[in-house]
Image 1 (cartoon, helix red, strand yellow):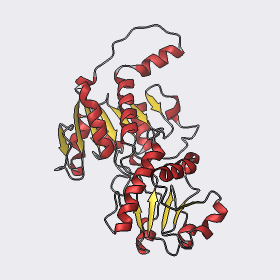
Image 2 (cartoon, rainbow, N blue to C red):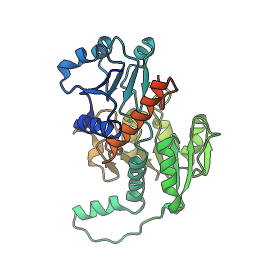
Image 3 (cartoon, rainbow, N blue to C red):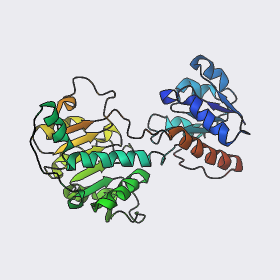
Image 4 (cartoon, helix red, strand yellow):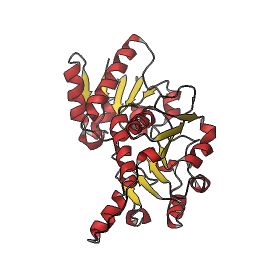
Length: 312
């Protein structure tokens, strides 16, 4: 079996991923292509391709391709239709980001609940003025998309006694840490009750623009929006309008409609907005966890079994 590891791997992580795979399974033969100019020739007889993205030319050149292992949880940058037409399986590494993103979200919640946003603003002004912080135990955290990440966020909220509600495509399969679960069609109920709204859903045709002006208006005026999903789940201009008219208490944003966030964006300058550069899923254990997912799927692929996290 020919397995090619792509040069299209973020943060120069290719060597670390390959090392992690080889450390666990030295019997597996991998070809790590580091020069993009050599990639089309290398994938000519590849059955398996491991990558963060799949250029059209590479897919066309890979005549024997059977399976693509994406190194991301979201796969919206892959051409699902083209892969389906070729009967090529596409799998993600969904789930490996749950711990770091869960911790990031908890940090966002405490940032606003304990008034760190105000502390930072006062520090810049060299201003000493005491204020009272809140407690998460008095708040309701709404989670849109109670999957692996949303479930971990709910678990992390438990020690703080926050009330957790959320939406899930299959509400009959809700984790114990969620106090109330709704189907995707009952989003309004979650919006109305949420002091913090955490977006943890995938980007699909149904979720693109899901949090629009009407959704933002349904939230309490002092609610805080947390987006660690995808930028296009939120109507960003409507979000700016809601913040500027005090119809929203604040926002913690790791993802945006356009990335990097343009310098002229008004989101940069607001004390009630915390901007992080799409790094919520970052962790020193990233490549090891990617290797673990790949190897589980490698064994399934060889045995003809259903692949984990298959999206195509």
